[in-house]
Image 1 (cartoon, rainbow, N blue to C red):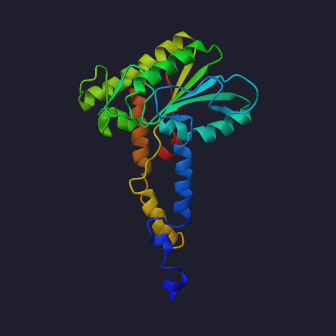
Image 2 (image 1 turned 180 degrees about the vertical axis):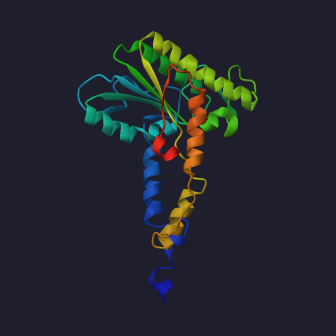
Image 3 (image 1 turned 90 degrees about the vertical axis):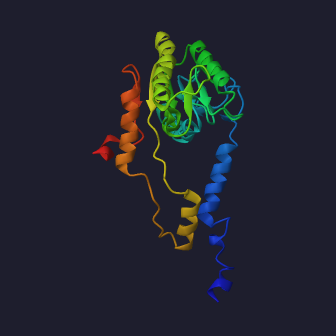
Amino acid sequence: MAIINSSGFPSRGPDGGPSVQALKAETAKFEASPCLERGGLIPKTGECLLGSGNIAPTIVLWGDSQAAHLAPSLSEAARTTGVRVRQITKAGCAPFPNMTMLPASPFTADCPAFNSSALQSVLADRNVTLVILAGRWNTYSGRGGSFLSKDGSWPSQEASKANFTSAIKETAAPLATRGIKTAVVGPAPEPPTDVPTCLIRADFMNGDAPCSTMPAERSWQNNQILADLLPRTVQFVPIVPSSVWA
């Protein structure tokens, strides 16, 4: 009778319950955003601005989809502080103009052109004073299955990590010459479990379904690894606050 009255526990089906449906709707909206580019063209001047007000953007958010995830919070912060932020993000592309991402795919083929255009656009804008770089850094160091290459050949994991440090410096150097500060946002914690599956379980158990999450120690390690790779001229902004590291 319980199964009949609940129409067979629909939350256990492939479409899930309310939590899963909300997640799918949010994901679809995020992926459909015109500010998360799929091609090689950066947004035009005046597009993809965060914050409010009729003022020129002085901050640029540049990176991949993890950078795009920061846009809503950054937009709210920009409104509160009275500044505008220009969003230049492309899915799957670390903000490194002189690097090729391997393995090659149609998804990342336009990354060098996109990033080169992004850098030139930022350098040409005399209003910009700060560039925020964000990305799925663990992936691009070779540990996550993607490698950074200077010449298109396959590097070792250590070489990819060295290319990562080199890419940060090569991106920050021309910005510094123009008087633009560079900040790198630390990697976001990633759950080692499948989120939709966990939400389906939670819906079925009235919200009481603990899911695996990345331990604070692991988040601290990821942040510390990145911080150690950065040049001193680049400011590091961890996603996980230092109070959690202790």
